Image (cartoon, rainbow, N blue to C red; front, top):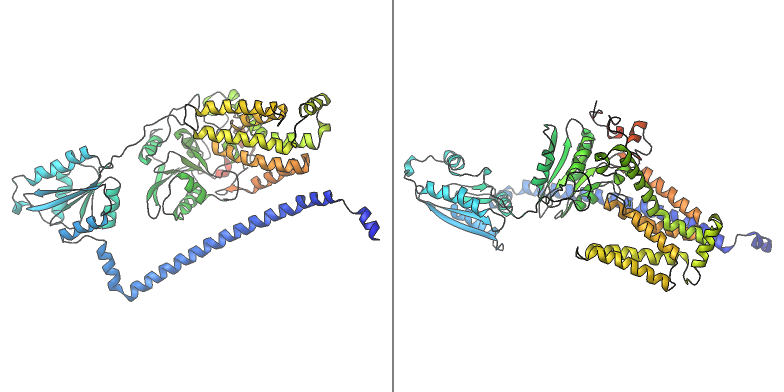
Length: 566
């Protein structure tokens, strides 16, 4: 009986294939589910800890109200001028870039002190609009008895003496310190409790330039800068509109930055806007250095290789997305804005598609879809055909390939990995090198390495052609970050092709499609336009229909106004 079972039992290679086919996907699925569960438990635990901390603080404040009042007193200005100045001096004791300037006001018979940051404050504006008017007023012949007192004196200094547009009176030390560290000037006058915060920020900024990562042949030559006020002004300059809303938020616990949520009030779905604002308010970090931090912290699925939030440095792309009913996020200190929700089709669309006529625009967009498929599956198809299915290749071509591979010591997988890793290293090195030599090194290095590898018999000439076409196709993506995802997935397709052949490539494509169908971006399916509820949305997916036919906005965005023209 055992001999009969042994004769009819599958061979060991069948068991290995079954293991890779069933067990490994199951392990990956269980691991991903466990990671999601751990992430959910961790977030709930952090929420519980925050609630407990707030309850403890409230209980301590109830038990010892004098302590809380003392802590409050430390953070507020009082009637004592010397104590107020001492609080600021103590706060900036280890900040050598904060300067101090004292002047005497004769009409008040009082001393005043200004605090400002060297490099962030406009010194010329401060001298002309703050110091000079203040000294002229202080040395005027106006008698002290004639001057108003209390609030009237403060209003007089703000409205009649200062020549700056941004003025504010505050009693909070922390607020004053934050303002002065952002370029404003603090003015403290003896006899007046509190401080005047006078806005005179300057700082060095970069001029408006052509976007580097999203260059077009036809279209605006304007890109966002690192200054938030300049970026919001660029959106306002697109045209007069009273419905363009911008909601401001502060992100970062230790280093605060301003974040702006932008949308059209009469177009965007209120639930989408509320969800974006809610996720922004959950950001809890010391500092948000770049919009990439925001993107990773508010996306739906952090384990997915696909972008669920699009980044761009083009104001025209942002405005086009807002007019479709989407929401944008602008962060101070970065030229990259975020757009949400996004679909897969947006990753292969360029603003230039709409500036050219619809026939060339449709052809170029369709070529991008083909290039994406080639960049993802070309090496995997080469491995599967050569290793498992040479019979599917025309006879003359397969004879040519086999003769070219004579003497190559490696398998097709190792051969493809050598070339693909070399191309990726060259691509990364070309980006990091100085601009004058970066492109030249990439081109020359690719030619030299490819030719040397063929001459040495390490790789076959046909593989060099496949890898070159793959690399060129990967550059066709208008969104650089989306191209990176395809480059990562390409290696997964290569490994499945080396194990299961063409069957593995098909299974990889199906698993990838299943993941993309399940993926959402702020409640909108990632492949929503591929399987639309209405065939009207196909007018702006694989092809770009004439503008006369695109009268409605995408249906799944649930916008208030479905009509965009007509």
